[in-house]
Amino acid sequence: MTSGLCDCCLFCECAANVKSVFVSAGQRLFVFCRNILQCSTCFENPEDPTVLQLNENKNELCNDQNLETLRRLAASENPKMQQTAAEYFLNLSKHLISPLPDPYLGPVLTLLYSPDLKVQKTTAISLINFLLKDTIYIDTVVDMKILEPLIEMFKSGDAVAQCTSCACIIILSSSESKADTIMHDGIIPLLALAKSYDPQVQQDAAWALLQLTQSESSTKLLCQCGALPVLVLLLQSSNSKLQFLSCTALYNIASVQKLQLTLLNACGCFLIRSLVNLMSSTVTKNAAKACQCLQLLAHNVQIQAQLMELDCVLPLKTLLRTSSLIYIEPALTLLCTMSSHAPNKDVLVGEGVLDVIGQLFYCQNPCPTLVICCSSIISHLSNSDIGPQAITNTMCVSGLLTALENQSMSDEALLQVTSCLQQLLNIGTLRSHVVAQVASEHIARLVNLSEPTRNPVLSCKCAAILSKFKQTGKLPLLTKFY
Image (cartoon, rainbow, N blue to C red; front, side):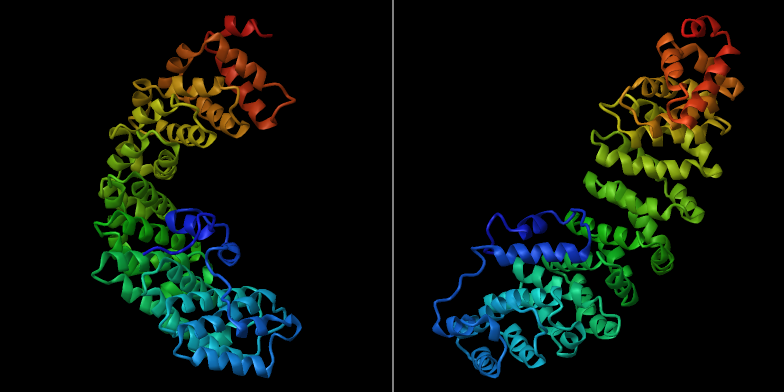
């Protein structure tokens, strides 16, 4: 079903790319509504003398005569008359700066129950505008039972109706005093839709639940009303879009640190197993999103133990071999966390992680995050029982030296690289391997970075490495630069 929105509307982009990272729920909704209200093709002013008369005097937008007219128009069975009332509320939402009198919410509720979807959408957008401008009170709206027609709008399948009704629910969910009502009238019906046997209905409901995770207050409500098992269950779907939506919602929930324990207690092993399975997805963005979600939970050593039991290394290596840094970085970040935990080290080395890490230094234009993570992983695994031999057999050291030569590399990344090199030089079985690969250009770079005018910590690290080289027979090379 087409939405009727022109290409310039922000909603078109929002609906097509639900994975977009939003700045904040309030700001996102404000921009969304502003663009829809300004869109010339969304709503046309009806050529109706009643609405022209109502709009004539903006200083007297709310009076008894207008209220009575709106009640009559809203209660009419004529869609055109209802649309006239809806258009008036749209105009009122743009210009009203004082609180909207409570009696005006009666016609609003009537219009939301209109059988004409265009009337419903126009009214819902007006309601969003009122809420964002604080010209109506959230608690009053909730008390009027406006959540019920909003949920019915969401079931319509119309893209604009779903987006506007969802936006209203997100704003209303910020009311702590009405949390129970919002949960019962708004969120629980969405969860029921998410369990539908219709894949499209499930997908739409998952999208709405995802939007509700954009603010902490509505995220808490989701957890309280039992959304977590539903979202985890959706990860098992064969629909890749549904997998992505539910995984992104779980990622947003896990991003709230105080909700992580709630998430693990509610879903436990089933959640971790589902995410590891999703990491093996042939849809790379889904695999990467599952990896991001696991990274938020992997600081828990029990979760790390489950990950190792579920053989998570293979899908991680697959992500590391993709061509896009967008997908490589989540896998690297998770590996960095796991490699710091002693019981995992020998397993990771045995699974060939260091071989992949060494090759990553040579990918096109490696970013600082990649270099930092790779250097950290090498440092973590170098002190395992089989780590030194694995480093000798891979491109790890040459990769570190290549990153050292990179003139565009940030000081933060260079600090991690030099810290790793210094650690490798302190391991007897690795010292000769590192020294053998150091050339004059590496010495020159270290001398340059050791200048006291640079980053003091970085300068100190480079000076310490040069001191090690003096002890290992690299003195002839060093004398060229002093």
